[in-house]
Length: 101
Image (cartoon, rainbow, N blue to C red; front, side, top):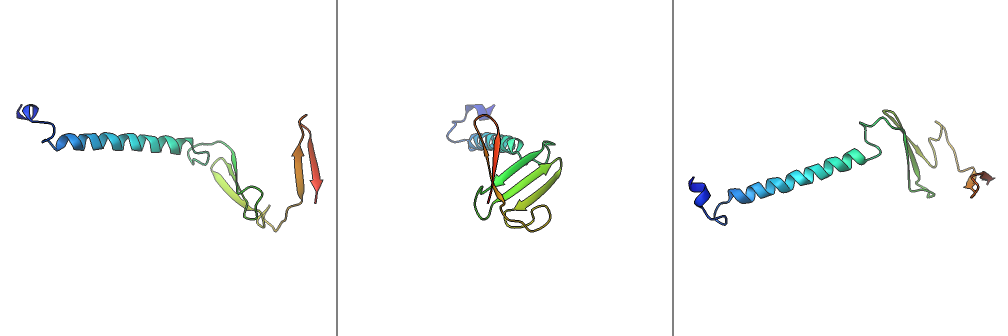
């Protein structure tokens, strides 16, 4: 009962309890961020991520189930060498127009 009579500024255990609370909130926020990541290995959804779209070092990452494949813009496309073949435009009515280069 002697601990209840002590001043809060003198007792260092109270500040440690506050630090533990802050770290628990930080860990919870990190776990939520990991769970919402589309490339999360624990989610069985199919996801396609494009890095650096339209640039020389563009990468396309395709996740199907638990397998992840990476394709680079200047190689490894379909297992062979490749280059950009054209541009596709989606029109307002939903149709797609392909313009070869």
